[in-house]
Image (cartoon, rainbow over all chains, first blue to last red):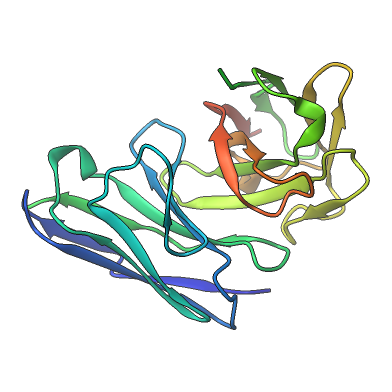
Length: 107
Length: 121
């Protein structure tokens, strides 16, 4: 099975900060990776698919990059509504696996 | 608009069974793969299972293989998860999610709001 790791596991940031989250796969997954945002008590919401394609309706301050085993999610200017937990998901091979998550909270 | 509504959660004793349902509307259910994803209290997301658009292909997480069965009834626009031999560690909110692809390749685009399963004696 492919294992996913994320770093950091949590971070504190201020509105307007640039935030970068990294996701690593235990083996190459091409660009079969998505990024999801989840707020407490809510279902996850997809932000990025195919590693770098922005989901329709998602603000352009979110961007994704990477291929193979290393991927990043960047928020260019953190907004109040972005405080949440972020997960990566590999869907290159079954069983699909999520990263453990990165919690972004207010400094 | 797309709606996914899960039901069937509740409190059950270890070793017992439960069946979850996910009623779909607002899209052609029979054309898309569907998934179950779960989240234990205070923990991260765990992918559970996928079924292709016609039910011919299914895959499971190692943690549920042999105990859980995913199925669908395209005439009723409903997805199911039959959960047998439940364990305390199966306690979680269970979400159904629609795939963008018929085969169910992991392009989740819509999620339900989840149903809580609590396994406790």
